[in-house]
Length: 346
Image 1 (cartoon, helix red, strand yellow):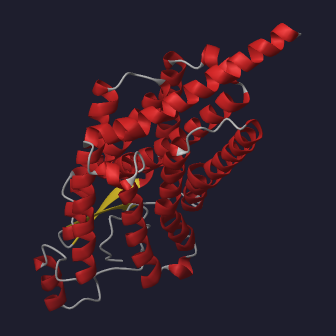
Image 2: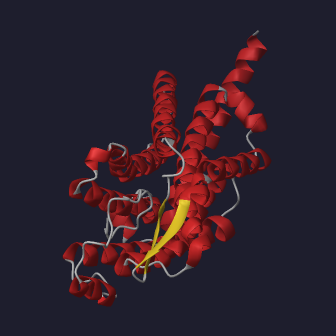
């Protein structure tokens, strides 16, 4: 199937060969160095170029501010790790853009495996970090005294490292199953599941469950607990941290829902239609777009619309991330003082 997608989860169709093509068609196929004669391909390439530019610049700015300009806190550690994950993925995009435009992989087997590995490393690390942030907030609200005493940079750094290790483990199938196929002078980078029965289904379902469904349930549960607790204690002074985090979570799931949907549809071999393949193309692009949307959300969720034009970009991002730390600190301090008075009365 000669589609023009990045082909992250493309299962090569053995029934598709070049044997039935005429000599003129084969020559025409060889001479097409790009797919820009196809409008959909040109649009996809353009969108990915925009994602690459915005993703590298935006996440690079967040890394610079959170890593070098702001005081290191637990919250900046979370967001810095998110930005690093997105930044690494964006750096690998030019290879996939070239492949999308030419439908010819020229970068070798190692990079074929590596670029797919980076995509899913980005997916799993992003969602795991969003889960970690949600659990961290939930623990801070439910157990403020414990959080005040134990919620520190060393623990946060250890959790980030663990999240990256787990993400790498879940991304490992890309290294195992990605393969190259060369035919009539063209090389394809694709997922080769044909020698391992049912592995395609196992990988697709594991990515959906552990990279989408289960994290979603955990995050929703954490935020439900937080909302109930804060409303009961009337301690929510600022809605900004919740708006930022809610936007990050909503954006992640909206970007990845189409991809997982079409991957699961592809498991049914009867669904190897143009609709499913086109859906995978656009689903992959939407998943890729998540890597540049996070820094945009840091900026536009930090202050109201009028203030955005008065403040520098650096100030906006610092406000978006720093406000969360100040809000949680105020909450922990207030909760700790309340608990201290209660223990004195006892």
